[in-house]
Image (cartoon, rainbow, N blue to C red; front, side, top):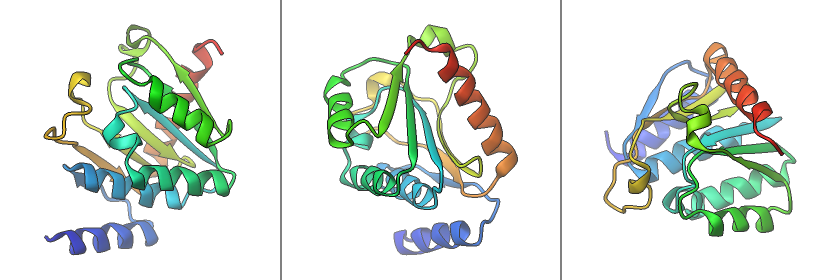
Length: 173
């Protein structure tokens, strides 16, 4: 399947609210699928991530996606659980989005036994789960970015949001 077919198929699955997993293995696919997921947000976006990867979070597609969320007044919460080279990205998120993005950081040991994968969940309906990878590879241009998005699977999305909320509650403000 070429990139145009891939993107059309993903957009169709989202628009039809199909309960199917769509895999990605490149940064471009990950950004595209995440943006598609975020476009349908009506209330909230919650992200549990490792390091706020520069490749991902500083990607122009993700910056534009966050801008659209802020413009729609969507609640955005982010948990970061590896504090590796992320001060600049944190500062950018905080300054560019004027306090509209809530961010908490936590030592990975506190949540590692409860949750092991990174994810984003939207409105308890859809999600993207990223496969485990070495945090040291986050900004390596050659590293593969594997994950799956499902635009409409409320039972799983609800569990992910409950997991996120439980972790969020345990982190001091």
